[in-house]
Image (cartoon, rainbow, N blue to C red):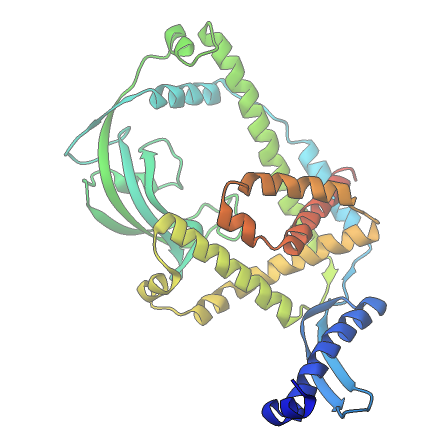
Length: 383
């Protein structure tokens, strides 16, 4: 089309603005790379001069990664944590093995549905929601959850509250998390529990003997099974101690970090938490976020406000680990990142919609961050 007709139809100003937008996108990216600016979010652009035949002039203001400073004595505290955990030995008692044998025997139990009240050692199927101050805790929603009453899987008092309940009966009660609970953000806090019993079944459990061991496939005698259980418990205990130690590392690093958190990072983390929570309630609870919030009598903004302290902690922890990686010159090779990315893509390769919509740049950064954090933890463990 002739230029003069396009200008009349579309407008000269519109064409200039579209041209400026494209030019700014290209030059802005070029400049932040050149100046090594770690930008966060979209820039706020102000055009200073836009006229045909003249140089385009604009200013761009953008949030940047905050200045992070970690106190020099942080390693002293990490060394103390390592010393404390050195004294923690992995010991598996005969009682622990006995309990595992009971679990295995129970896994082979015959289930008989009954229409009476639930008793100790019965198998029940329950729906539950755990919340504090009206806000569900992380992992606090479950549907059709199987449970054997009396095994002590939940916090003290929970299973006791199920005794006497019948099929389709609902109950609401309050319990306090133990002060030494493994999740420190829940330790000592009171929580509200809503439970519905869907099914009550009596368990007919086989005897614990050589025959039980052989029924599990690769064991000749009960002693062989016991040795295998011991190895598994040792592995589990080792990983549990590692997780506890790394949690202590993160808490210590946060205490030693001087940083002013940009709002854009906090909001981004809150939105990520919201997305994770929405996926969880849709997958497990079969309900969308809007309907769930209506039941709670809350809206998204209230939920975001409640989660803000946790989001701040997560962001601060990520910045602390990132700063350690920078100070210790920890680098991740591209081939390591690509190998991990391929594992993820292989896992999702049969899910068409997922593989087609994966953001490769975001996946790359996510994998890189995880590998970097792992190397930071390995370095701290050697101090």
